[in-house]
Amino acid sequence: MGEKRKKILIAIVSAACIAVSLSVLLWYSFNNQNGYALLSALIIALFIIPFFISLEAGKPAARDIVPIAVLSAAGVAGRVLFAALPSVKPTTAIVIISGMVFGPQAGFLTGAVSAFVSNFFFGQGIWTPWQMLAWGLCGFLAGLLAKTRFMRSRYGPAVFGFAASLMFGVIMNCWHIIGFVNPITLGAVAATFAASIYFDAVHAFSTAFMMLVMGASWTKKLSRVKLKYGIMEARGNH
Image (cartoon, rainbow, N blue to C red; front, top):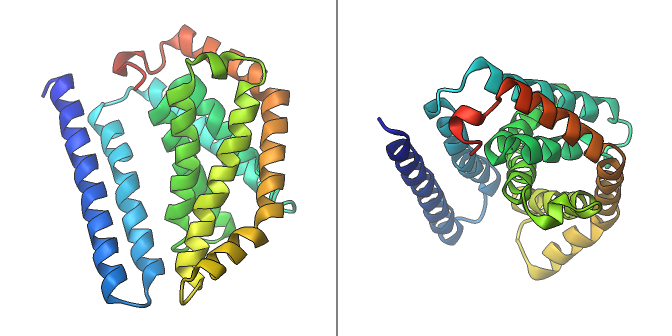
């Protein structure tokens, strides 16, 4: 199967997963009043599957897997080491850097794997797919924007890190609402987001600070490694 046909197939599978999952969620929401948490976890898992399928379809060389494995391990270590400060998540900065250097697919996989593996320390549950999606999107969007003038500016990555951390908070607030709020009302939603403002702000500011402190140096060093060993080049860094 040619490279173009593989991309088309992956796109079709991704679109099908999203369409089916959204349809099921809408149908269930109109016909049931509880059980959203488990269903949402299954749906989010459908969102994540295409990224792993695309990695497998690309038949990556060992050198392409190593950065994802190493940066995922760093993301796990960062989360574990800062467990006493749960709102400070070095994982977010590491995932963003992964996406900026190695591309959106690598960024997403680094985020998803970091969340999944670190939860062996913090506890697995139906919230895990939501965390995998949240961190995965941080890396994915960083990869998509990596070559823009904004991300190449001095403060761009830090601003992106701030915004990505807030996005992470919004996604996890959605999980909390779906998993624990019953009935779901506008007031309950507003209260949930209001209660998380402090924690989301700490996450956002700490990520921005880490991007300012280590973002440029890590990006430069990892870019040299990528260039030296031709990492991700065979698959066009997609």
